Length: 59
Image (cartoon, rainbow, N blue to C red):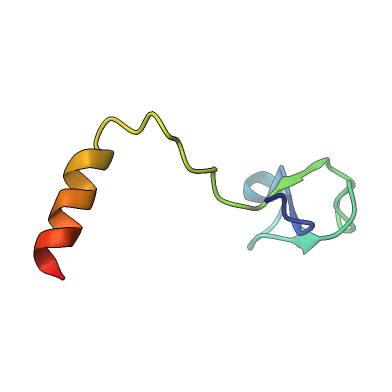
């Protein structure tokens, strides 16, 4: 799922805090923005079996 919310790609250099927008450019500094969504699920997760087994034991 792709998020419409984007964050300034240069916020660490130009801003005190992350600048979120729906535009492809930052409204404050004009830098390119990037997708703010977390990385997608990786089906080849090398630790997935261990994580799921631990979750089953805890529940």
